[in-house]
Length: 164
Image (cartoon, rainbow, N blue to C red; front, side, top):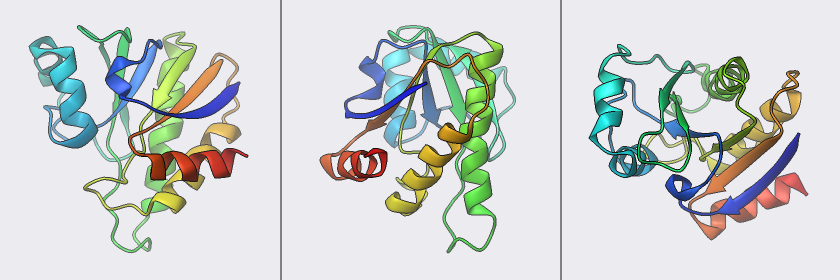
């Protein structure tokens, strides 16, 4: 499995699936979530309405609609409350469950945003370490490429440093 980090708009990537750092309603919001919903069009929110929301750490799949990516994997990261309320395990679950869902649907190339580091307040360095470690620990064999799609140069520098 190839892992790499880039700075880009995740909605423009041509991969099998992009991951949405969603809120529990799955009906759109700010940040990455809002950008994905705007780019995918109103069909995405209509499909998300049928899913009944999503719990923190879980992952659900929809079509990509107007995106280049065929699918969107929605996952809800934990709100940072100091790290003593299960946040690391919940964040790792986001990555584990997204990868498992991608494999079940035979998706080979997947792009992740920096889950939880926006309005949910997860510290970037800790979140990036969990993201990379969790993906590296993935034991499935179907995923060929994982892209960590960073919004800023600062985010990219952290991921690039951890990836070596």
